[in-house]
Length: 471
Image 1 (tube, rainbow, N blue to C red):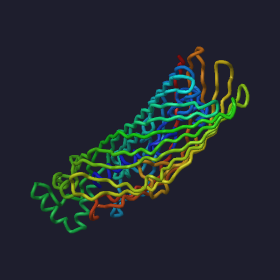
Image 2 (image 1 turned 60 degrees about the vertical axis):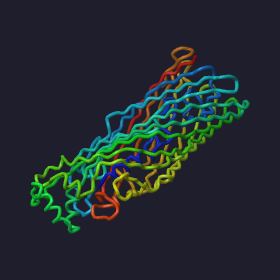
Image 3 (image 1 turned 90 degrees about the vertical axis):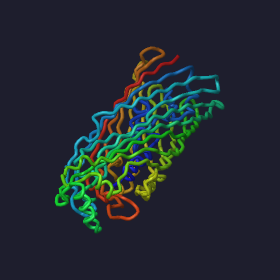
Image 4 (image 1 turned 45 degrees about the vertical axis):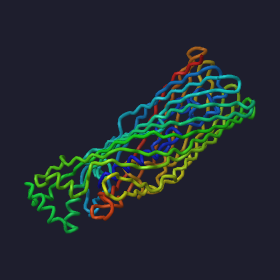
């Protein structure tokens, strides 16, 4: 296992950018509290300035100036049970077989939107939101530590937009997406496996002489513990989004929204820490040199998947409205990831992902309780992009999920209101048996060669609140 594998996980993380809250991959929480209340079914409603995210053409329905600011707290509960994770030699990795709540107790994501009606045809808008993220912190001695010990992924998108109302039926929208991403992660380094690889390849005697020459005890090599490595990276990417809104009559409208693929070049560095190796036999510099683990810069290029949404809204009567959304994500852009290492002479590492395209379907409704309170509810089903258990990695133990949401809008004054939303997401059990295709004795690449085999179980809750103001 070397710095290639570490930077790979960053690449996987960045590949999960998307446009649908609570969706698969690394898509984070909710980008709109009012939308969350309907399980993101209200793309054609254009209820407030957060339509910048769902469909910029919806800006054409907003009068004057409007502001929406909110925050969504994601509260996950996750467990892992190991089912025989092994080193590349086939021996057990050891460590903790069970992991409870390796995800944080809560993570909050803010959102901010603003719209300004320029005239009867043109409306400008701006959005700032979190499109994706993750924060996993496994114990350092868990059974899958050679694949991952921790990962944290943060993002922010700035989305200036413009809508044009052609007539009472047709409206168009356009936006620029400026995405900032930052990632950090850690992994255990299989020092015992490295030693076994040296012995297996015939270089064990050379390694023993080197350690003895520097004061170590080669006879105690078998008791060596793990080393650890960490990596950080960040990047800006630029894309765009489009929207179209067709108003059939005063009660019915349909929307189409598209978010482009975004090219990213993630630049970062890996740092290796052999001071955690516990055996008196080991001289850290020798092990680090023999295993070719070097602190270095790294680079990976990738394109995120684009999304296409089709949605509808219908006002049945003065109290009831219904809505629906279908979102397609082209996750198949994520195939194998080729990681480059600058100035090391090491070959690239290729990681199998082979994600599949996914579809998310949501249905929602709203009910006007009285002049001050509007109630919302919605259900959704979303597929995970992971194609099989052999391709399910510890950094993304994703699975298909169902979502149930409730929400409410409470009018404070004629020009201000508060939105509330609650969602419960239930994930299918996610079994993984991911094997690193490179191992310590392979030529032209480096890796632990581990197989992480076990089952992840997850459910989560989302709680959102937002303030709306019209000027």
